[in-house]
Image 1 (cartoon, rainbow, N blue to C red):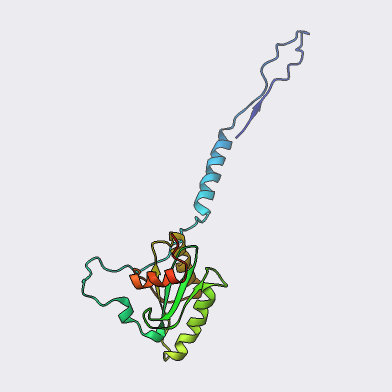
Image 2: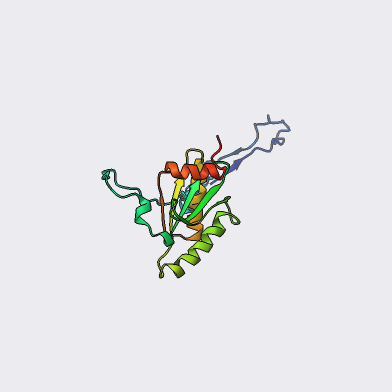
Length: 185
């Protein structure tokens, strides 16, 4: 326990003044022990923040070169292609890029831009495709930033789109971005 040893420095019996000793001394050993116990307790009981990461399925490394392109695997009335351009803009094409049903239209990121389009198509596609869900093909260009890709993946999570993929952009799609003036150097 902590104790305080202190001499008052008063006169003794013979009228002699005793020399004043240094002030009191406090033994803090117990306080140090208590501090370490509290630090240990709070370290063990607090919950640590878990890193926020999104699971993305990646293709196998032993990929066969003669596999069909993603455009050939998706139905026209179920696919939505997002071409990520420069200046934080996205070109949206409903259907195939070579023969679109709608588009291309240029939108921005956020609730009034791409999220609104994704919500509309997510509700529309099951009605016209016999209950099947929307497939989104994300094609970042070399003029888009990593932040653009992360924003699109966040939108997929927010809108709760289950089927999406990231694919390499083709020269025809780059031409679409150039026509929409979102492929600036």
